[in-house]
Image 1 (cartoon, rainbow, N blue to C red):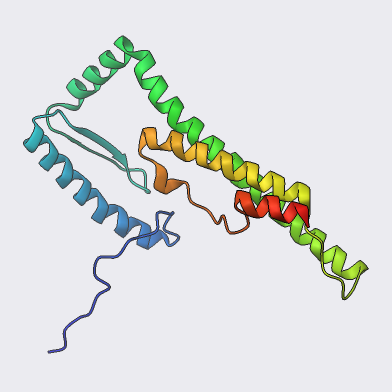
Image 2 (spheres, one colour; image 1 turned 90 degrees about the vertical axis):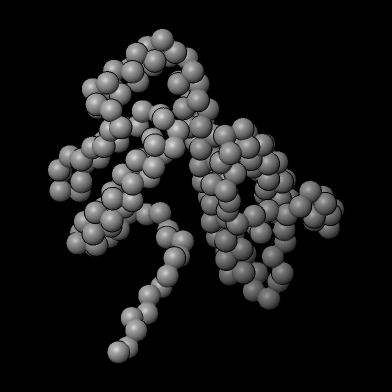
Length: 182
């Protein structure tokens, strides 16, 4: 009898599953795993755990180590007593992500402008070497510094793996300064 081969455990890219049928299957499998982890967490720590899910088809699912009403009431009570704690934590994370997204978008726009500049230069001056854009190099060095600051902030939230994009276009500080002197 031939043995069925599988892909085994692989890292799955976190994005919406395109196929509706595959999405339903993924939801069912992940839902069971999530509930099992919640049960395990509750039994190991004695914490009250509650999970609410709405399937892609709109059907609600829930798990609670005690009653869902009890957990919801405790959570809302705590949130009313500690509004600043919840808001500061969520605000800090969202600010870090927003800052990173803004920086990423700026770098993408700069790269597109540079590509267009080089293309126009090659058309206007065929056979000539495209001179470096000193202002762009300075901006890229500044962006690299900003990215390092964002990563430092992200360390406070243990989110550093979320802040990676191609910095090959960003020269090191030394390269930026030496390129500006040519």
